[in-house]
Amino acid sequence: MKIWIKQYYKDILFFIALIIVISSVILPKSLNDLDEIWNYSFAKNIADNLVPYKDFNMVPTPLLPLICGFFLKILGDELIVMRLLAILLISFLFFISYLILKKLKVNQVFAILASFFIFLLLKDYICIDYNFALLCVTLLIIYIEIIYFQKNNNYFERSKWFYFWIGILSGICILFKQTTGIFVSLVTVFYPILLLNNKSELKKYLKTSLFKILGIAIPVILLFIYLLLNNALYDFIDYTILGIKTFTNSIPYTSLIESSNIAIKLLSIFMPIFILVIGIYILIKKERTLFNFYCYGIASLVVAFPISDNIHFLIGVFPFIILLSYFSFIILKFILSKLQNKKVYYFIKEMSKCTVLLFLVYYLIYSFTPIASYFSDTSKYHSIEHYKLIPISESLLNKINTIDDYILSQNNKVYILDAEASIYMISINQYNKNYNLFNRGNLGSKGELGIIEEIKNFEPGTKLLIRNNNYSKNWQTPMDVINYIESNLTKVDEVSIFDVYEINNSISSDL
Image 1 (cartoon, helix red, strand yellow):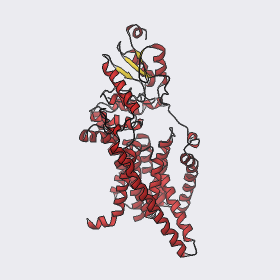
Image 2: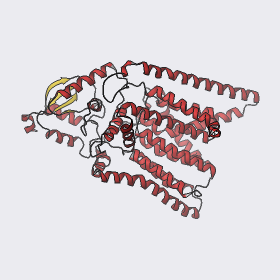
Image 3: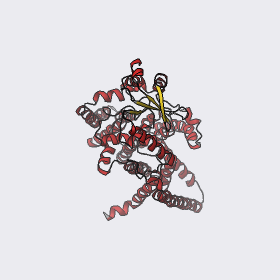
Image 4: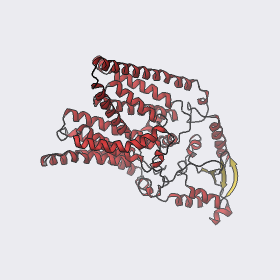
């Protein structure tokens, strides 16, 4: 044990440093990230013994909510538990990036620096999310593949269990998010075709592919067994397959180029060029160690479409940013090696190392400031259920109290038809399927027309809260439903940012 610690103590220290730095970003965050809220809502529903798709609407496959729901049951049904899980998940994400660079023979200091700069790109977006979980597993596959390529460059001369477990990990990707996961699995099975040298290797490829397919199939079969046992298979198909036709949300890639974020703007222009050039280089040089890396990177890009916003773009190009770091190190090393004066070479090398280390130590120490601020921040000490120890701004706290008090004071059912619905419903332990996550593409195969039909059958006295037109609506809001309510129901009240519409006998009979 002592030998192991002595050998890997730098890696252990770096992982601890990651936890500290990432904690300084995640813990002090105010309650305002809808992705975090929606992912917590999924996990909370699992902890409350609800069945995904059957009892609550969601589009991605359910592995992350199942895992997080398990921890909520054990540690307590609070958002802070999800944030602690997020700290571990994101720390592992950057740690595996660092390990990949080290395995590619990148200098340890440079690997730490590269991981740090990737963190700076993503730090405003990190939270518990199935896309990050899938990315972690994809990078783990890449890391394992690199290890085996370095041990034996012949891909088809490995233990059958290697192919099986790579298949298992690819199948797990499908359980985190079916779209990207399927592409990762396709790469797992088919990319070795491009490594074939002769007919004898073709037979080996077919054999190894069977073990991979078996591995991929096991998590998928377990998911279908879970859905069948809970009578949720039809609902799963309805939301994840048939409902896709109603998913009209999209953000064009050009929005990244037009972004006010300089880093995003530059990356969105540079990365397509880099991906093309580096792909050609890998093919010409027959760099097998990097070839699998490149193929899994292409699969990861799927997440950036059709919603090419900052977070989806950065997650999509994450593997290629690691590759960019690797080639930057190679170029820098080559330039330094051309220096005629070796004393100058070593001086620059050591000075660079000291500067980087000082910078990283400074940032690590600086990270204690927001952590200290979090523990001294009184905004996290409030009585809102499920949000304990989560900083909440005074304006949002007032909104939650006002809206929740209004809902609880009503004798009839109240629905909030807004992207923020979960924020208010979670704190009073109420869940309304299709309405707590009221976004286009998340409403099943019937889409907005199905919601309108449901509204027609609501009991008289039911109240519907929609955002007042003085406040901007979320870009994913199902506007056909909102327009229908405004045109066919009567506004009876206002509460905070919402207009209140009510179903009454005369209106109900006319609908």
